[in-house]
Image (cartoon, rainbow, N blue to C red):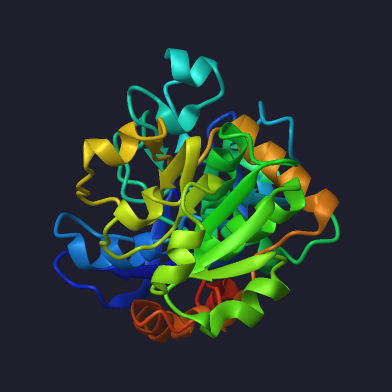
Length: 350
């Protein structure tokens, strides 16, 4: 058994404490990764406030360096920079897995934290820690020339918006709108622009117009302005809705073009839809989550070619509590990333 140091919450509490964590010995196709940078996701915040069953170590979008490899691991060697996302295993047998959509595994994918290991039944502990052990098939090369701290959020926030943009055909000749300019939304804008789509930001106020332009958007539409909404009716082929709070999707469906799609990604709770809002215009309401190995690799390759990374604020991992508090207030532009190197003084890597 290997040991490392990380940040763990005890059952029933959201406070994270530095502690020693156990990692499994390497299986034949495993790699051990020294975690250098880990993004802070809204899912981490929700999980910390919801968990009441066993210890929780958050963190599911990270980059680092391989420190060891099992005898059957051939894709990576010690010293290689790698990235890992929110899925670390799947059944590999179901129709979805065979199509490269491990994120929709019918047996449910193994999550980077808060999941159950498929081999020994142990709970998975996330990357708010200095080491992570993972099947090499679920690790990816970090594109050369990109800041690894700013790459980390691509493995959750990035792939979450990349997959529906690709599945819905965003590109030249399409009109894409992004609702919500946060951790997911700012990457959706960057991707849509780089894919060649005419890209608009949907926002409740004009305050983010400068940021929208900086990210490459062609326009910002103020959704509280009835005149602007009316002028944009039936306009967009794809709307990527990244708003994390509960909200009415009716105004956004009104902006969807004939045969267009609203992809609802940010808030995963209950929503109510009037059938007529879909019927008139053959509009579609969809959702998506994470991405399979093929799309994750394609996204990273695309980011390497286009120089795309997340806009991040890097903080020492010891400041994780403050980062989570600020995230709860949406006080970040646009993703916190933890620098795990401050754990070295207490790490006990075997």
